[in-house]
Image (tube, rainbow, N blue to C red; front, side):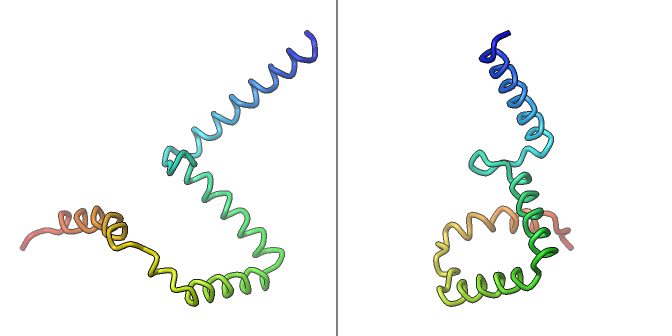
Length: 100
């Protein structure tokens, strides 16, 4: 085997391992990105920062919250998008309640 064949074989094996890992993570997807993989990555990052630099994490959180309040980010949401996101949960909750 020459070096090109070896490289192609290693690339194929790497892709197979990646596909297998992504299939084990979960099937919820948003825009092609695995949500649970993204959540696990974010959790790992936050726990590392919290362990190594807790003050920086608190200050970053406070800065983010202040920025959201200052820019009034909740006004950016359109009401139709808000209702589209909440209506299925509301209908499910209302349907699951027993009638007297």
